[in-house]
Image 1: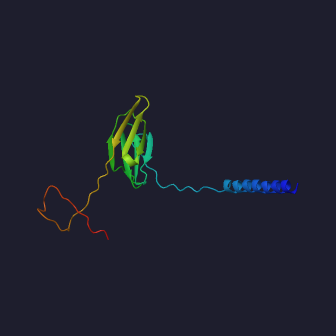
Image 2: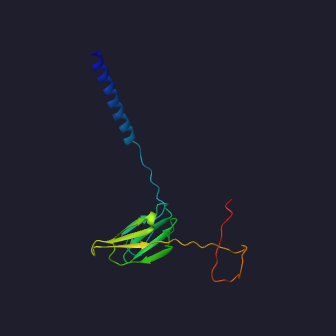
Image 3: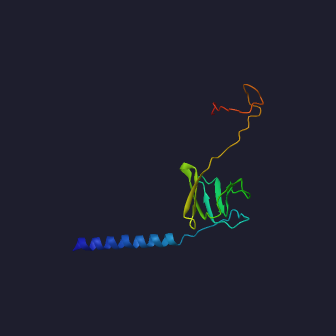
Length: 141
């Protein structure tokens, strides 16, 4: 009888502790800070971000606007069919996947990020005005 009573008391204590813990967690508030509001010429249909958060893709009728680092103006635009109404970004494949509910169509667009590297003042071999420059990074300190 004592064992049953002890088990009931311990069970009631654990149950009460669980209720109190959940009650405390439910009273924690949320703080929201508005970082930026971006106006577009056309109504936004869908928004996606890259996994690292550096790029934001905004689907508007007929194009995808690409923003970088919470910029106010797009760094690039991709023309797409006006019938596309949804999109997602597959980071590992660098694919922007667009879908159209009305046309029952899916389109995949590969995204290649291009960075310009300044070689001004760097040592070089060959002609300074060569049409192609190969930069070698061999000193990572």
